Length: 183
Image (cartoon, rainbow, N blue to C red; front, side):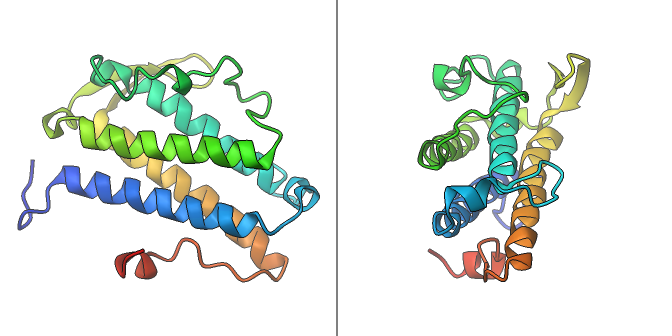
């Protein structure tokens, strides 16, 4: 892997995972100030409501973590049965209750961080196969798939931020500048 003055690719993904956890935590803290009705109100977004966007992110992350198993089959992190809930589906919410959804988000973010701590860096270049959400067999390079999980998160947190902007609610949960300054 490329060494940029000691800043290895593994460190980049760990940075992304830690930033992702912090941005999600700050977003959920802000969203906890809204009523359940406000979080579930159809805002005209692709998934309708903030609640459905949050659910989409959780389902997507769980699917990706399961898809990553062939990269490192002996992974203690990815073999955790909680990463494969029986109700994992795009068709319905994992959790109707915001507090349960938030706890699930915390758990998944912890597992994403642990996954990047656990996975040997030399496996980032490995090809792997997975089934997409419609069952098609796909091929990917591990590192590129890892990038996608974070880009997906950023994209949808941006949607939530835009909805909050239209409601006139100040939000800055995804400000990387403040992240660089520390917790």
